[in-house]
Image (cartoon, rainbow, N blue to C red; front, side, top):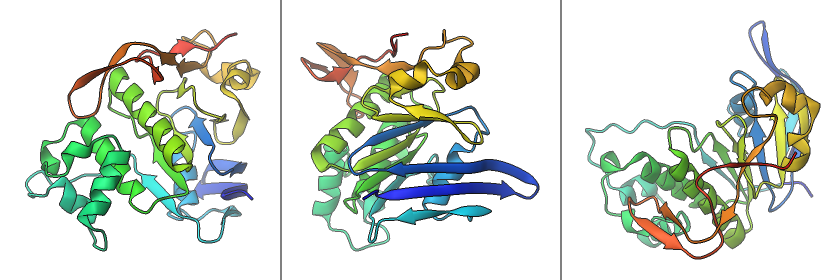
Length: 259
């Protein structure tokens, strides 16, 4: 049974229609990446899935009792407000320090618990947001342009962490990519959105679809770029430290999918 399904979803704001007749479903354990130009309705779709936007028509159906973890596009934390990562994760209450420590470990930043939120780097902040989303042990993670503002090494490290989370917890992932033609190679499906679903399939299938190339062919050679595995590569772990790994990690720079 699908974790969630979107049926004939249409969303409009006033006289403007931003999404028209969108259909998709997310199965347990799969990673789905949505790509599309600015204004294509990606964030509106995600907001409809979490119930923050009411559709004009169509519906979103969740599996009974579905646990959702959500990493928003942006979150402002007042820099003048003293707040440790532990305190931030425990708001509004109900979670123990052990819960916070476990979530930070899953997010790949176990040493940040006592740090001040205002002192975190962009990559560290996103890892804390990921930890917050993992606190409820979600069956599906929704990520709205979670790597926006990060450089290529930071994005690659975050993608690797998402793969580790999926591997370790079995949760599904629905991710919006702000890098118009870049997705992580672990994506089981890519959905190309531009007010409607233009095309979908594996990264290799989408990269060769005429609808995809019509949107993204200029400047990318029509290829969908993937973060691929590379050996003996050094990356930032999100804590500001570089570590060398001998296996099973992605290159910082995306490579083009085969034509």
